[in-house]
Amino acid sequence: MNIWDNDVYVIKQKVLTIGRKYYIENDSGQGMGFCKQKMFKLKEDIRIFTDENMTSELLLIKQQQILDFSGTFAVTDSTTGQLIGYVGRKGMKSIIRDTWKIFDTSSNEIATVEERSGLLAILRRLSNIAKMIPKKYDMTHNGSPVAEILQKFQIIGDTWTVTIQPNTNVDRRLIVSAALMMDIIEQMRGG
Image (tube, rainbow, N blue to C red; front, side, top):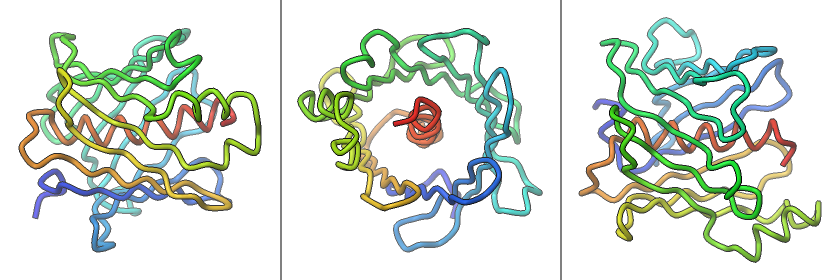
């Protein structure tokens, strides 16, 4: 089965390592992909491989500009070199409630990802204790559900479950990339 044919992905962060490492599994716990964030980069350059040996690269997620408050990342299929689309954080909107956008190759918006609870989002920004409450995101397109992204509470490391609507037209590679980048950027911001 192709990694991009699933409707459920579990993204687990491995901690206590140099640099961040993420494991992508299906809902049965079978390893589907591996990602290691390179340290000390001016522009994020994230790559998803088939496994921890990093012999076969699947995706390249690359930040578009060095100083980009919103953070826009191009997602490219590493096997074909074809641009799939973009994932971007909405800088000003994310001050209150984390909001991300997904764009096609022509930069047309095809989905929005937003924290489910505005009240919890504000509390997380005001209290370190509230940061321990797991996050929930809804991904929509024109008001219709595309996916749900749920964080599982853990003392160290993050685990995210991404559940995709089976009939969605949004490329699963962009959905998984968005979930991964949301955690990476949030970790860099200290939250």
